Length: 363
Image 1 (tube, rainbow, N blue to C red):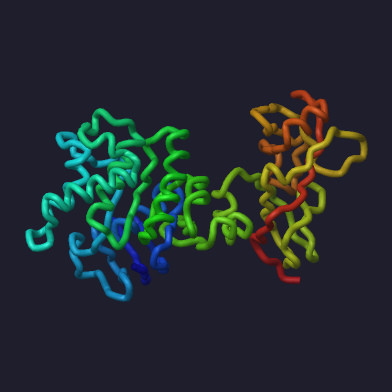
Image 2: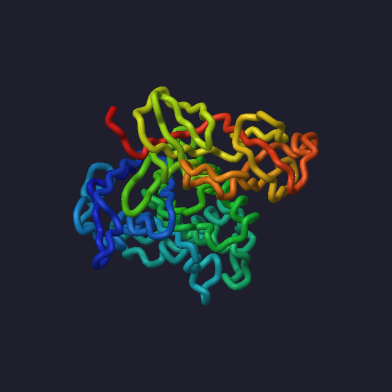
């Protein structure tokens, strides 16, 4: 089932949760709504489910307006962050619940329910826990049971609200892989909400970046990472250093050096240059070196990666961003080969940057 979101807006008092949001989700697609707390992603998910009503705009399922369709008739499965399992019911009864409360005319027989629940428990690899109660399960197991329960009613659309938010990092990673494999097997049109960029980039077919109730960018994980459409997207997706400089005659100058960029031409004006930590070249300082001169204040070597915290030696009056910590990243072996220790002076040179011109100045 495809989903069309058309010009949806929603206010809670004076707070604009959603501002004229439009989005298309193809049938069988897995889409992530990604953004910081309060950006509107959960509100949008609840409007799609029918748990909230939009002030303006419409939601269409396969071309049909759902405005007047009750949540029970939308054929939507919903998985919440905190499982929402019935504590007094066994795992089997939790999964069977949606089937048992169907109208009598649509309710499967007891034999069909038993067969279906066991098939679903096998699908989520927990058929051996059918007689347990939720309190006897781990967090990851509970979330898989919650997903099995949502799938029991054969939803046309599966909505997941921070499904792994309450779990520890190792379990989250395992469940992310498992959810992707499950989706590839079932092809249920799915939308999940997360504020974890790694989760969205790893699991989703497409990522929808949201900020302050608006959609900032929509694209494949690779596309939004490689070609961020705005400063917000660049800053939100992974670690990044922000430098303030000036764009002039097609060049960008920051901290007294020229930064190579992926963009071909600029107007003149204030520029924001975003540089990923791994895009900084680090070398020991020598007289006459060109680059950002900085003191190595901290080095964290974990496994194959060395993460460096650098403090610029001089604050450039033209650069309000200097004087802050610069983060750099390089292979641990390269760091050892440089023989650097905390307190040493280094030179950091951006290999590439993404530049946004903040204001234009007439020639």
